[in-house]
Image (cartoon, rainbow, N blue to C red; front, side):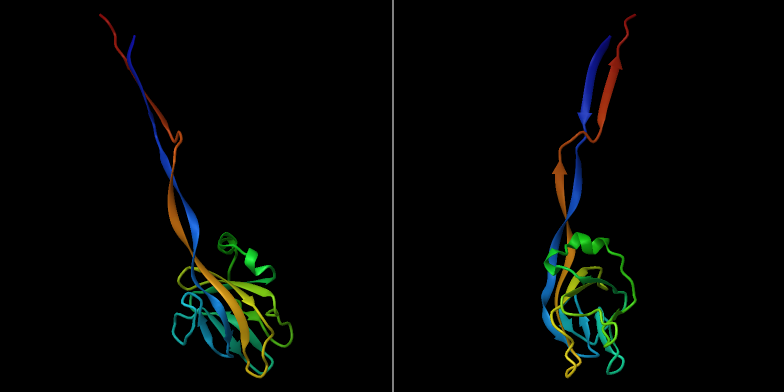
Length: 168
């Protein structure tokens, strides 16, 4: 005969990422300058993530710097690119061609950068390359996922304790 019957419902929690914007704006990057997407400033420090490199008067590229990585998305809707999408991309160290021949950095082009600090940026080319200034106008948004813990009720586990008492 059973004298006690008990059970325990084990609760669990889950973490979900909520996007937090840490830097956003518009800027025209002068030729040969570097830009830190995390702080949103032109800089010559090692914090820079991208370099608008001018190799010759006709040869240019957007190159990642340090541990940052880059990928070109092409002409897509900038507003619709989400943090989740940015996190799922395959990034690399190959620069994006912005030269007179084979230019990918045309108005409306979007590229993504996994920054040196581990954040994610989407960058929109907002206008054509300015040949008189060797500059490229951009708009960017840099985001970092911030974990949020949400308690969920459920049956993460079910424990049954059975006791059997025997009579003599």
